[in-house]
Length: 78
Image 1: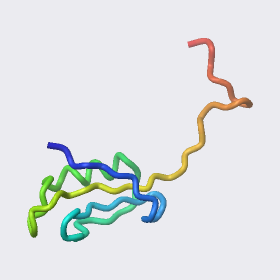
Image 2 (image 1 turned 120 degrees about the vertical axis):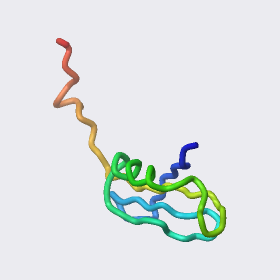
Image 3 (image 1 turned 135 degrees about the vertical axis):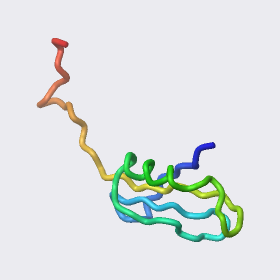
């Protein structure tokens, strides 16, 4: 089973945390994007060991500009 993922704009930009939905215990807080957060989440079970509640992965990703725009169009010759 996979840990549930939620976008949380209350935590700082570019950070993540793993928290129990029942008791509110923060298991881990760190900086990084989706990839780093998912790697860390794989270390934890889906259920909290203290209360049996569901662990949730919360992230607040950095804003990433579009790679292509009007001045830099998508390449046509692939």
